[in-house]
Amino acid sequence: MSRLNRSDRPYDIVLFGATGFVGALTAEYLAAHAPEGLRWAIAGRDEVKLRRLRDRLPGGAEPGVLRADVSDTASLRALAGQARVVATTVGPYVTYGEDLVAACADAGADYLDLTGEPEFVDLTYVRHDARARETGARLVHACGFDSVPHDLGVYFTVRQLPEGVPLTVDGFVTADAAFSGGTFASALGQFARGRRMVAAARERRRHEPRLMGRRAGAPTGSPRFAPEVGAWALPLPTIDPQIVRRSAKALERYGPDFRYRHYAAVRRLPVAVGGVAGVGALFAAAQVPPVRRWLSERLKPGDGPSAERRARSWFSVRFVGEGGGRRVFTEVSGGDPGYDETAKMFAEAALALALDDLPETAGQVTTAVAMGDALIDRLGAAGIRFRVAARR
Ligand SMILES: NC(=O)c1ccc[n+]([C@@H]2O[C@H](COP(=O)([O-])OP(=O)(O)OC[C@H]3O[C@@H](n4cnc5c(N)ncnc54)[C@H](OP(=O)(O)O)[C@@H]3O)[C@@H](O)[C@H]2O)c1
Image (cartoon, rainbow, N blue to C red; front, side, top):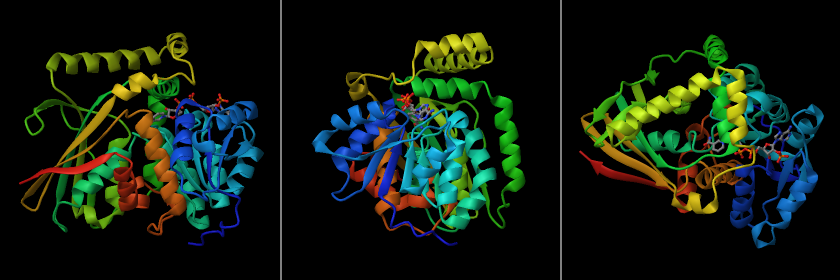
């Protein structure tokens, strides 16, 4: 692996999509928390909007301002060439994201995003992982609520269990939060692309080396009452179990035979039934283009929950890990999952890639593999709690 010499680049971190809902929260977080001397820039397609954002950043922060547009490949290449780390919020990623991944892989710039779109992650693996390994670029997808608390929460749980034995971990997600226009657009788009998602996963399987001598799985569980957390558990078909499985494949510490199941935890059965019906209805609506268009106009890009609504929001992911005769209960918890905490996770992941002493990795890597302990420490210091609740 030959990591390109990147120390002479003008910026440690470039935040692309800084004018969007999560982008602006991330810029504010960096302005308030980046260490002195960090060289960073905000980037986007509208320079006037970028300058207006810079003027209202806290603490008199004065990041650089870079213009780039996803429809102008040369501008993306110029952006990747100026940065050690590029963090992008420009989604839906399957529509807007690939050229920037390609530019970062070629330039040897580390890349991170907020995607929760399995199709996009599989496509970029097939098309850009090999090039990124050559240049030393780390391509880290899903650095927000998808999938940081789940990926790092499982990593944290595994470390509480014995080494060298088969391990199982179940994750139970509970949250009270609202979502933004950008997230709504990405979710709707994803629901409409089921077939392409399956095709991309198949293509990935053809390219990905098989795991030899160990097993790592993330089977879909069944709906059930889970006495271990005192709630109804509904299988959650998000990207998270796929990310956890990739971490388990890459890290020996997950043992010879690892299995993860991912659930939403709901206290009351009628709420569980209503939730499943609601997601089912949205999925059905997304298959009909005019209905999908009508729905996407209800929440515009750039819109999102108010600061008051976000202040009341919270999340908790409880994990039950078992193996080698031991059982451990752990929890990752924090405030507003979709935005405030996502911006925090995203900014801290960018800072970790830019500044921390991390394991040597390259190509498409998960947050646990690229940043594991360093990112857990950073998030803990920033108020996202990782704790062991009980051991048996
Ligand atoms: N994983 C998670 O937990 C999580 C949580 C929250 C959000 N997300 C994802 O993050 C993404 C952003 O969400 P959001 O709510 O912040 O969306 P948003 O408010 O719509 O922001 C989108 C950003 O993309 C920019 N953009 C759009 N087209 C562009 C182009 N052609 N060239 C350059 N920039 C362009 C927009 O620039 P303008 O300002 O110029 O329009 C804006 O800065 C979505 O994909 C969402 O699903 C993930």
